[in-house]
Image 1 (cartoon, rainbow, N blue to C red):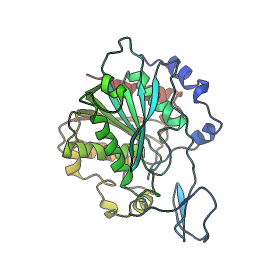
Image 2: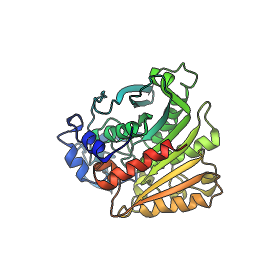
Image 3: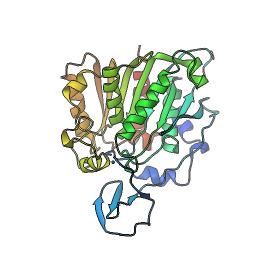
Image 4: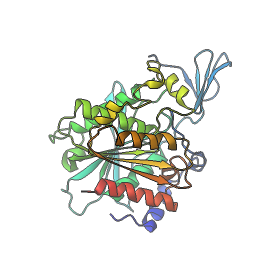
Amino acid sequence: MILSKHFLRTFLNIPSFSSPNLASNVSEKLRCSSIAKPRKLVVAMGSINREVTHEFRFFRVFKDGTVEKFRWPPEKIPPSDDPITGVRSKDVTISTQPDISARVFLPQTPDPKTKLPVLFYVHGGGFSFESAFSPLIDRHVRTLAAGANAMAVSVEYRLAPEHPIPACYDDCWAALRWVGSHANGHGPEPWLNHRADFQRLFLAGDSAGGNICHTLAVRVGTAGLDNLKVVGAVMGHPYFGGNEDDEMWLYMCPTNEGLEDRRLKPAAEDLARIGCERVLVLVAEKDHLMGVGRAYYEELKKSGWKGTVEIVESEGEDHCFHVDNPTCESSVDLIKKIVSFINEQ
């Protein structure tokens, strides 16, 4: 499907994606940064002792251990078959212990037997909020699936701090392996069995999701994945260490190794063994994470990794603008760039 500006603006403004709370959610820019025992979680009130011991960008912690999230709970919408793009979606359970699920997207094609590339998408939200089932993420992944003519698997992973890091990394790795379990045509999800081209899989994630995609790519290069070929990875405004949110990530990961933790500060040896051929790094001029995103690009170039890396800087834009406001000119252009990256032969 050719992604024209008219198509995107028509598709992205259809009523099925509207929600009474979406406008207020979009008005606040998603900022990524990102917590081994479970912690108590409340939406607003509920702590017996109201003394605050930690105040972070997305949540605060009280003296009795209760956590109050500022953007909670996430709004969720059911899967749907979109009549405009022809993209269908369904929700699948990957695991019940731990609780991991995903939303799978299937675009309409002239030949129902055509094998399609697979986009494995990891949402952002500071490791602590958002959902694969939210209107924002559903719309974004559906747009990419339609434009790239690709299947998409959008992962619903466990969130911190109630599920301390590394739960998010482990869940996404388990979900990626679950996708690979369909390569023999006998997996639990028929769409993947019959329509997925497992030699053309792409990792993609924004913000915290970009960080998680990096760890997945390193793990693929280290441990490998049977019957799957990861061709490329899209790191959208990725979170890494070296900014004001480091202390929040360290709190969410009680087993951290400090500011030199490889998930926070990618090591050169990890970058050198990233398990894909191409990487696209996205940064935005006004994003507080622009510096760490550009540093990731530069470090990857000189790491000895044998693939090709490209960076795209969006002038005048802020963090995850293409997810928050997909109809603006810059977003339309950036989405077309991601689609071109996936479709590149």
